[in-house]
Amino acid sequence: MTVESGTRRNGVDLEAVGGLVRAVTDDATSAQTTWAAHVTWKDAFASEARVRTFAPTASDEPPAMGGGDTAANPVEQLLSALGNCLAVGYAANASVAGITIDALTIDVRGDIDLRVFLGVAEGHAGFDSITADVTLLSEAPREAVEALHAKVLSSSPVGHTLGSAVPVDVRLAS
Image (cartoon, rainbow, N blue to C red; front, top):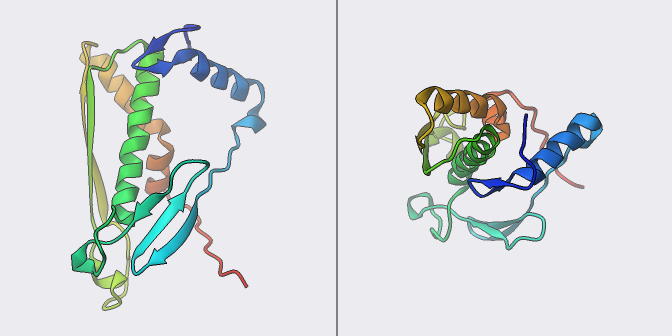
């Protein structure tokens, strides 16, 4: 990855990205990171997640599911996380590659059969499929945009997590 020092493209601080690349290249152990969220139930189907020092992110269910519809529900937040992760990937990789993004939108949707969640059937409770439609406007040649797209898909942490069987260990504290 080649990065011009002290420049910005697409609002991305290329010096910061280059510094991170150098740091993890020089010391592979610095690439091992842990991310965390602390979730507190509020009432009914409402909860909030605290991440680092940011204001809490609310969660609720729509009225059809018995919620108060005060915030996006967890599956909508998961779809949002994928879209946001892809957006970061496009911005970072385009900037490093010298590609200016004029506009970027990502529409993410997924299909869930609610019967398992509601306890009226057994099987898979999660998404059956997830689709993301990316619209990226740029003056860059189509081949460069396609290479950027392939790079983003091959390096998206949320995309890889959703596309893989990742062990999840949910423990009840005593």
